[in-house]
Image (cartoon, rainbow, N blue to C red; front, side, top):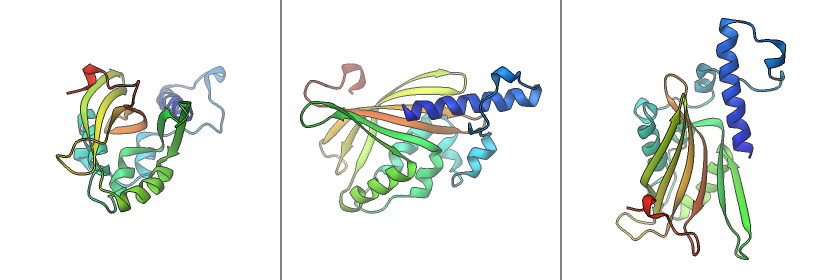
Length: 196
């Protein structure tokens, strides 16, 4: 929900900034002064510079998202990771608790890095997309990306699931706004259209 709220704020902010350059917005259409508004330049100034090849297209940023978290046990290139995401991006794991109840675990960018560092320090982790299905409207895209996670290349996946990835194009580059995922489990198989 928080990721959706941030996405809505970003969309409103960019639209408001664009309209404000052309004409004054009517009083009733203005956002509260506390609502953050970011231009493409504002966003770029808040994160490390991205590699042009990582953010030049929707396909490129999807490859980069999987690539930057994959590797042997040890650290990852967290500067590159941060460069792909809106500073307020959200990561949300929607799954089931051991008792079968639904649960949600949510992180911001820095929280995700903190927790991922702990796991990646001890374990190799390789994740790749199986199938990406995108819907695009204007400057936004929603991608259902099925994935496989492994501890070693060529090994049988220990986990599969679907990432719901929200992307934004600022006119110069693509950004990841949020990633929401659910994993395959008993009673929740990966749909055939998202398997190989």
